[in-house]
Structure formats: C-alpha cells, structure tokens
Length: 72
Image (cartoon, rainbow, N blue to C red; front, side, top):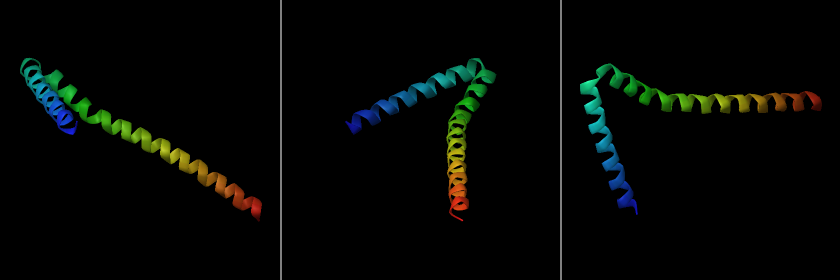
C-alpha cells in the first residue's frame, strides 16, 4: 500500500512538473504567479490556524485571570 501511494505521488509530481514547464514556456508571467500562489497558500493556511490558536489561548488566559480575581 505504501509503495503504491509513493508511486502515485511521484507520478503526480512528474506530471505537475511537466505541466508547469509547458505553462512556463507559453506564459511565463502566469506560471510565476501560480508558483508564488502555490508557495503562499500553505503559509496562509498555517498563519490562519496559528491566529485561531492564539485567540483560543488568549480567551483561556482571560478566563484564568477572572478565576484568579474571583478567588481573591
């Protein structure tokens, strides 16, 4: 199962590289934009998740502060 998955991933990567090269040869600006977006999108997703986590932690800190004040 693992070997099959790895082979499928390699084939998909090879096809993607071939398609990207063809696109880059015909429309270099569009290919560059797509490449940049492909690099940025995973980072955007990660930043969004981290921002959500920070918000969650800030809420927990606020609750703990309230509990601490109430205990005094």
